[in-house]
Length: 197
Image (cartoon, rainbow, N blue to C red; front, side, top):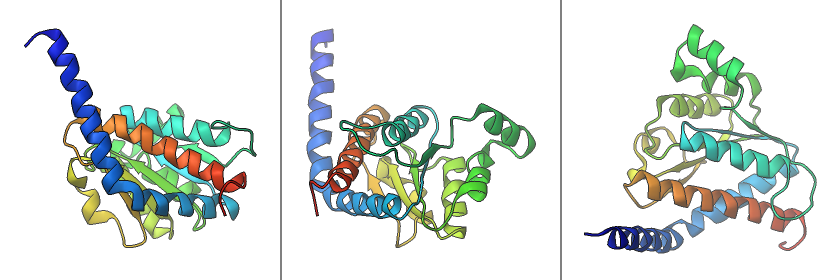
């Protein structure tokens, strides 16, 4: 195989994953948009967390909410739990890395809030502990995963929303995750700015 064929395979695989995701995730995306709009309309905040590329996605998503997505609107309350290095290192040092998001959810989350939990495998211990902490506070969870959902399938409750990308390859999952987050941003804006009833 030459490099041109290798590049073509990436585009083909990405297109196939995109198509399958559109077929399988639209109902859950609709639910997630409604949940997020209800959250921000009632004065709630959106907490987001993840590791590595998922941390970047969490931070990106919250930046779109607090700043703006494509159009002017009021700033929306959101916190990326993976961005405060002092909290991350203090909790990681004193309690262990598995607790870096859990402690923040315990400190910050209220029942009207939503936790957006991102893990390509669905197996990240610190994200799972954040989900469990959210449930203890009656906080709804929107989970983004792939690889058939991993341990997320065991910890998510009936009121949670699971956006599980139908692929096993991390890069493909991450590519769809950023699209899903952009779709959520667009849906929130569409309701808040009066495009949808």
